[in-house]
Image (cartoon, rainbow, N blue to C red):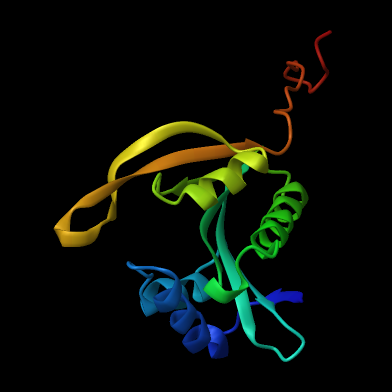
Length: 165
């Protein structure tokens, strides 16, 4: 398996996987806009034959990284591929010197919740009615975060730029 940037020519395969993996998949516009809008990072996890096995899409913010979508092909689940994608996300966050990684997850997605908790994420909130659900209903989202780097506090400085000790 190898990770590589997601390209426009990957969108059809990404959409096919979205439809197989989720009852309420992202739209094609969601995926394509993540490839053309500054601040987004989209990565594909492919096998030796270049077949898509998973992907992740994140958005960089000030001192944070927000995981928007992480998906592993249903037939590939349980093989540690989501952990591979999360490890890459953590490396990305460290390179960007992010303080936190944030994400939302359906409480009904117990496998994902367990994975995130195992990987050091903690639940810090709930967004009511965040996700579409069957029969026109809505499902809450758990808001989770993982600290990446401790917040750096700098010493106060004088107008001349000298540190006050």
